[in-house]
Image (cartoon, rainbow, N blue to C red):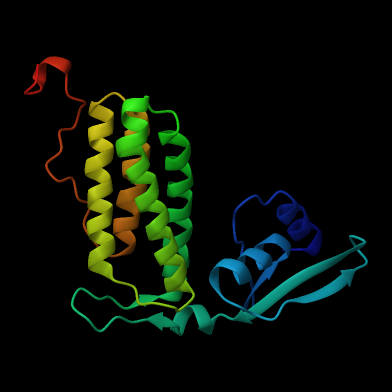
Amino acid sequence: MLIDEIYTMESGNESSIHLIRDRKFFQAYEKSAFRFVKFLREYKVHHKFFKKIGADVVYLGFPDSVLENDRLVNDQKGSLDVPLKKLFVIYREFYDLTLYLCRLTSKFHRNFKFGLGDKLREDCILYLTDLQCVVQSKKKFERSVFEGFLVSMQIRLRLLMDLRQISEKQWIFVNQTIVKLQGFLGQNPVNQGLPERPLLESSGPLA
């Protein structure tokens, strides 16, 4: 990409970390560089004035071998060797999912907003914090814990749909994201025997 294209892309960058390949290196510019250092790993940040755009631009770079070879390994039961490159993707996807759920649960009826809604938000934020520590190499990635948490999310969100707090369309969107995360771990999608359609009011045991 040309520097003017990169600068334009970063000007409108609200929450992403864009890594741009340059031969055998990856580079991050402006907001992406800031978020990379803040949330993922510390790297030396450089700056350079580009006459073409008339602006000083900050950037960082590192060899592609860092993403290919750097693995976070947990030697305990339920562990998995996960390349750092894949952990970046998992972190990004889970961050977007947590942001979406925070907005979604804020619209719940008060009977659910301060119960299931609060608990779901808190659990997602706590696990997002764990994932950030993982990509920063401050702790090991535990596959079994993450898999169990994703299944728990599916069940709680399905309950919320049957309780009329989220729509079927919202449930499908969130579930597809969870299935994508399960796929990153090489795991088959988990349905947990959940019904394909929302339950009718008369179909429950309390009807």
